[in-house]
Image (cartoon, rainbow, N blue to C red; front, side, top):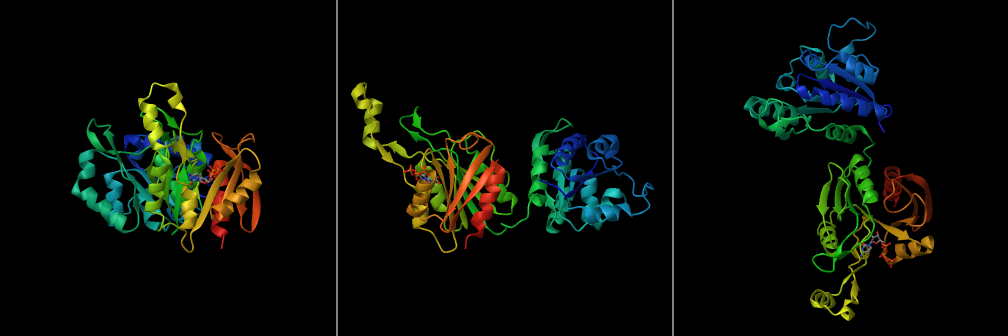
Amino acid sequence: MLKDKNILLGVTGSISAYKIVNLASALVKLHANVDVILTKNGERFITPVTFETLTKNRCLTDTFDRGDVSEIKHIALAERADVILIAPASADIIGKMAHGIADDMLSTTVLAAGCPVLVAPAMNVNMFRHPAVQENLAVLEKRGITVIPPESGILACGAVGEGKLPSEQTLLDFILRETAHKKDLSGKKVLVTAGPTQESLDPVRFITNHSTGKMGYAVARQAMLRGAEVTLVSGPVNISPPPFVKVVQVKSAEDMFQAVSVCCEEQDYFVMAAAVADYTPAEIKSEKIKKSSDESDLSLQLKRTKDILKWLGEHKKDGQLICGFSMETENIMENSKAKLQKKNADMIAANSLREKGSGFDTETNHITLIKKDGVIDLPMLSKEEAADRLLDVLSEIK
Ligand code: CTP
């Protein structure tokens, strides 16, 4: 995912420096080239050898290091970096950056860099809240530097409050958002529905289906990484939502319809990957079921839930593109082509529930993309790769 990307990590003096070891390792596993600059105070918490072992690159600590005379190290590092993350960022480095002070390897390198810079402050809560630090952070943000907010919790000093370095995963997500993909969807608004919906029979029981939400969540994540502004309308699932995505949690088809319809006008693309429960109890009968002890009353009267995709197709604005999903057990192509027409969609992503490795609760999917002017049969792919290919094809529809 990060092949050919150069990530520069700046590590300053804080106990949370240990988290950057895991982060460096995760970046290397994603095939990034990782350079680490450790400040003098950083070296008191962690050694350069730790980073060198993981990254296979020299960990730099000294501006006047005489190891390689063929290049001026801080300039070379600054020029080749695709992104710089300073984490943990002490009050000291934040102050230096805000005031253009360049008196060690990290501060000189950052000053010479033209790439995006991310800063993750980590310190005692009173230090973090001090006007000097807050004003310095505001200066950095004004210059286009991204400040990753610290988390709240018990700090190493025993105090409780904000100042904790966010998890390795959060830091990684910020780096991925910056570097992982071409930003070909930036400026686009994408609405994704995902997961199952639940139709209550009574306060205890409900009708639902086996959807895990993985496919829709993968679409939302890939669209976000490609620069889109993503709204994810999700039924109840057990997976964590992707970062930097607006998540609207819903239960029933009616909730999902409300959440979609309220923001549909401003969207560019719709990817309706939710497995919406097709039926909901008809009102009068469900009341009867709740109250009755007579088994003959338990024959459920059902009515269709609102068809969100169809409604969107009927209210489509110029320039909007709609992709529906189709989960079929038989006659996939015929049924999916009929759905494309019936719902006035621009594309149907068809997958078979009978094929191994495809459908609900798998990590992979075999999708066939059906458009008005042709069919693209994708190979069996991870749900992330399938989501990317789906977005490629959808965004190319004229
Ligand atoms: N869908 C929807 N609202 C519904 C039912 C389905 O928005 N009430 C969307 C799904 O998210 C999917 C597409 O419609 O993108 C197709 O869903 P599917 O369940 O395969 O088909 P149905 O429209 O329900 O048609 P049928 O059950 O008759 O095949």
